[in-house]
Length: 216
Image (cartoon, rainbow, N blue to C red; front, top):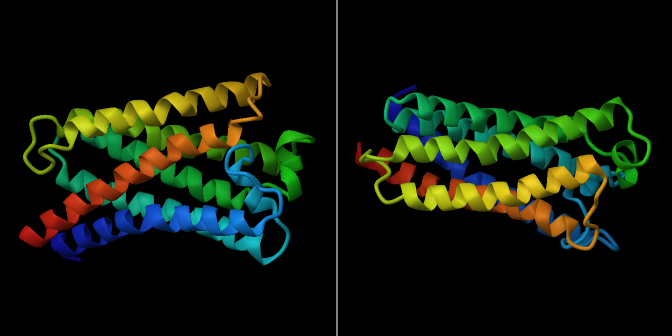
């Protein structure tokens, strides 16, 4: 496969991942009685019995695949720096985490995670943590790699802003989950904030990657 083809595929994956995940959450959330984007954890949609739960988990895994493909292409277009390799590697880990979260999913009501944790529930927690923290932390390293480069001129500063905005809610969310100091009234909103910022960042970087692949 030629460089242009690889870059084009990577940018297409980056453009697809954000709307895929957001439509998945919004559409399936609207179908689930009592589900709230402010209070409900996204993982609960994966525990819905039947087709809707299956669609959610497959969609989460597909988003993870798109993030991995995007990360591979991004690394090829970033400067030859260690920070670029680390940043892309963390994005790959984040994508693998999303795949794992879809495979090792919640049961009905996420009881296997929140009430009576079992091995599948524990693996869901671990892979979800990798998905959130991997994608969030990657932005700091990608920012460092972008600085002084020509391909992503103008995106370095927004990348740093996105890194801060993505990681603050992520840290708050996981600290409250592991300490048991749950913020039930806004827990769902906090969980979404970090991931949505990363997805928006991926989309705009993918737009730049598409422009670069067409100009080469």
